[in-house]
Length: 388
Length: 160
Image (cartoon, rainbow over all chains, first blue to last red; front, side, top):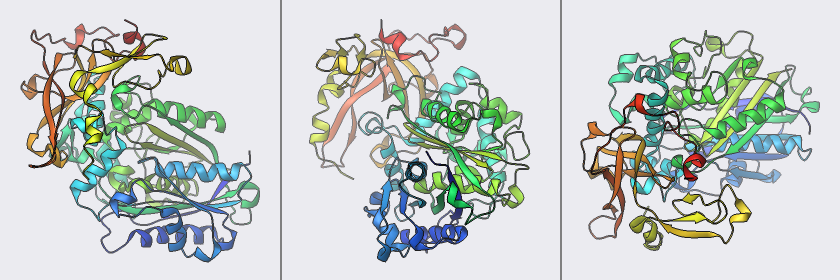
């Protein structure tokens, strides 16, 4: 297997982008990453794009070719492939691009991730998102997406004594980080009372425990490490790439409070990178709901199982803590255009490792981790990036 | 998005009558029925036999839904739970016939046949199971739950 480097980063602002279309967003993110990498179109061997549900959100499938076309590459006939794994579509696209270079098939690959969610109303958006759950045996009986994570939260509180306040502090922390991110959907801090008093969505989760509906796109350029020197002085490699699956339905899992897909995907990535959770300097984890970040830091091995809530109390994961988590603001504050999320996480880790994260820069960040979840945990990707 | 009636009709044995299946190799029970046992895999092929479940169990976890899909709007707020059936499988279903505040982890429940959702005034009505408190309500306090009761591994329960 060949080593793979990240040589280009780009993303749009995330938010309610009424004036931008699906193709404008992906073209904007892609051209930023391509210009950042300093490559030309004819050097691109392949494109992979992560999209969850363009068919329902904008009535358009067949978006692999569309993205290549919209980015101005129709006359180059670049192989372009769409990858789908619900909210992990972006992470899967990154991994497919990574594998295609590591295998020796490609030298330079452009990865995109996008979702344009505001072209449909709130009800249609909610119903589209719940297609990531089990339609026949969860959604049919009235389970919603927040409801599934709420059931994880209820059980976590019961088993480990995790508190409503600890959940709320995750949102407070991520909004504080998002306030420093120019691309974030919500660039403002919130206090704990606001989170606790927010209208209930699915007990015990309130509105501010949930990531928003968002428009946005992100893109990265990957290159065979042996050829990356031509494009960059600071070599950032993907040293570990893991992916795992689990039962589609939450109720069929080994343990309601553990996302085994995270456990397995991270083990795969740690082993390949030859690092341990203690070596990670900063992480972007999939905080689609506040409870999801608590489970993630446990299942990634940053803290013991059940200690995630206490880690929030002890401020381990804040920007000045020993392991800053979601410096971008996370899905909660930066926004969650589902297909874009897994790619945008790599953009943030890349910025941190290049020391270009401005006010949210983590000191001496050398090893970063990106963790992307699909559904309530049926799909997970974990990538480890290192400065070489 | 409206789906064809066949999609609901073919699930009637499960949703009306709790028909699951049992692996002929390891005897674990599954609901909904599986094509292959995830423990025995190829050894289970052709040996998955239908079995009727009792529809009794206990609540493993729950939530109260305040923002729901269009088809469930009239029911809001409604409780949704993961119920562990006495035969082992866990399923997702609504809890009915009790106060929202009375719902607790560990609570004994039994299934009841109810309307789940409908395609507006003129469309099909879809039925299935919901759960109500068991006749003799036994609420396990947190301290009384053994460590095995706290989210047991499916295999430990399924081997009963």
